[in-house]
Length: 359
Picture (cartoon, rainbow, N blue to C red):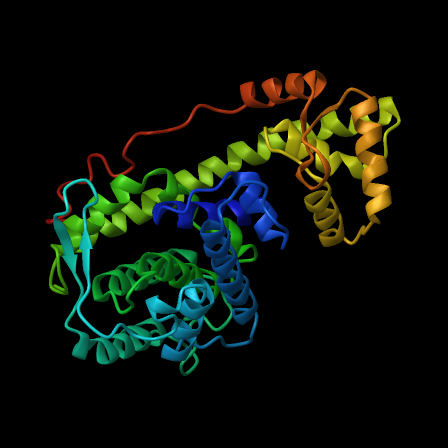
């Protein structure tokens, strides 16, 4: 579900809005219930690119290259050939503010794109202990350093704007690539894409402030670094709260399943329903298969009937559109889980650190 949140967050910034349960279905390789065709294709493209990133970084010394960046971009945007998936743009590109039509950023001159992208790749690999390796620590994690290098890779790609479309998604994917290559045990949990999706205007504002509307590499990047570090902190706090609430809910669901004599494997479906997501047969089966507990369609249908008869789930829709939501007993568990969460922190962790232009 965290992987699905990353996919959902990054695509929502570009206007591809989907419910989290639909994003989760796509992450599991299943059809979403409501997402439009274009949104589904965008979600699938980003899922494929990020899945490939998670595979690439398991190599002993993963290598950043122009070809890798182009390949990831193709995976994300291949559904629309007019946007030149996997190829540099052919002309100039501008970013406009939708509300006013004002141009807020101009990509570098198209003739400079190949050289600047080659320089970006070299900068990603520059501090490596192994030639051309993304991982600057030869397998030993140094997350603080990696966060800075990943943030700068993100910023530089956005400022260059090498593609006709999909530059933001590609920049966020590249950031995740650098983070994952640091040796983080669970790179999915290091992503800040969910945070960026929830704070899109602030994200745009800091990019605009640091970028100044065009490629200006001499500008002060510290506001961007502070924004990124704060995003990592807030996302980590969100995950801590979520893990604690999830643990409480899971324990109660296990006890409930035992007392009501429903199959233990159904706890995974009940868990998603507790947190307000729709559950349907395809996603239930895919989640169990991912957990090495594959079941047949007949068993899945029987499980849902058992849960409905027990008063734990409520059915909606018919045939292929049939899905299930939480019944009152699960809603009570959801309320207790939500009430157990610590309050969110909104203060600036850099307050009192001085002006970023002088520190």
